[in-house]
Image 1 (tube, rainbow, N blue to C red):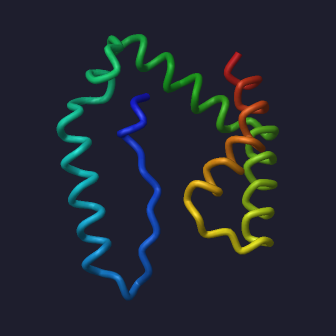
Image 2: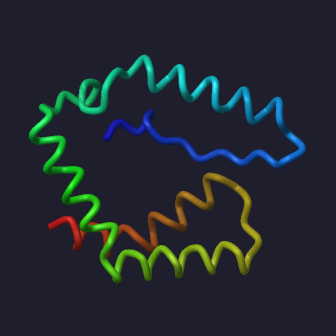
Length: 102
């Protein structure tokens, strides 16, 4: 999936204008990409098969456990930096997710 289709940002309840800006920009970006599969150059049947495989992988106990481990680690260390969060999740989840997708 094109990475521009997902985004993780933080906005507190006191940051309504920031939240509106983030959602508005993200919505415009996804609209520009068109329907799911279009920007990726994937036909509907292949897209459906890939999404089903991804759902199966994400439902695996091993992947959920590794994600939980990453989350606990980040919370324990009070990590709020998006780059560090992404690197930690990738490092802890990548192997189990790759295994589940095979």
